[in-house]
Image (cartoon, rainbow, N blue to C red; front, side, top):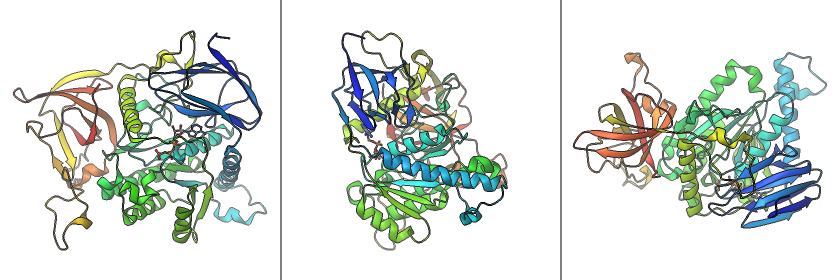
Length: 485
Ligand SMILES: Nc1ncnc2c1ncn2[C@@H]1O[C@H](COP(=O)(O)OP(=O)(O)OP(=O)(O)O)[C@@H](O)[C@H]1O
């Protein structure tokens, strides 16, 4: 054992919780027994690295011994966890999947009458700030993937402040085939292949993303509503073409502002319409409300008659994340998107794995290219600062609607493009007759860029992107995220 390592012996159904300071890393080895990090099992004898201010827990059902090296700013063992309740939920969802698969295979109906309308679980997770929504989505997804039935549940993230697999500002969906690791808040849902084809990560996901561009939903709820519906339509298309994949179901992680209006500045109306957008778009049949009595009552009233609304316990381990922390996480996410993930192991640890991969496999080298202003067409959606429609005097019309794509001229000094994060958008419909004004809102993202320099006299700008390629003729959309190395 390393001299600065500590051994933790965990009883059955307890968890070791830790929090890391900026720059600190932690190496955890499962010495023996069984253990998992948010539903993903650890392999005995392997060392797992955590960094970038990660806050997480290693839970054990049967008991285990962990060897922990490095410095955690907070670490303790808790025997009060809601894991049994989450596991019961998983069992209920598993039964729904099995029943749905039986119907797809045309197997004879069992005694169970409900086979007639057997639907896989399509779950919406709601809850206030720091209730552990993302963690619950991850645990339920990981349990499904581990069930040994070849399930690949669709995990959907409609929280634009979170980033998920892409960069913050995007909402996305991906079918998950292998357990999602936890190593850093830079990729809370595991790593995606979008960042670069050279990312040889064996378990990289291929998410479908749409670009909202802002952290807060109140900025443009109409736009978010439309993007959620677009994402839902895409997911449904995928399911229609593959009824077996459909039986794995889906799990949707939402922003806290769907649950708690006043603090987030989101009106009750826009909260409710965004929840409804999710329920419609993903044909939700189960709503999970994490530890919030009032919201549970509200959801029961609105949806209780036609779908299952369940209140589930919040874990005492969930850490309150303040605004400066969230901003640092946005930076980690963008850095990871461009450069891959690098966590220096604590002294004395030479071989370790990061989220299931060898550390060196996760390093990328982005490309910086100078392009002409004419190469890339840039848009912003809606006017730059816009009061919600409801705040306009009655009868007043906007000159620019929330949904209108507005061309951005890099040559204008107030373009706000320096250091801006841009989403590169899939090509427009090649058939001119099929084109329409707001088409750009319905196109998915094919990559993200950052403008690192603007040279107005020479009409050129420098673009940082994960991989090389030409931008000529492409379209990108700017939001309110900025990033500087
Ligand atoms: N049992 C636990 N022990 C230690 N840390 C935990 C535990 N559960 C969750 N966390 C950590 O707490 C933080 C908040 O959790 P999570 O992101 O799941 O909450 P959320 O409700 O999705 O947050 P948001 O307010 O961003 O919507 C994360 O850093 C997560 O890793």
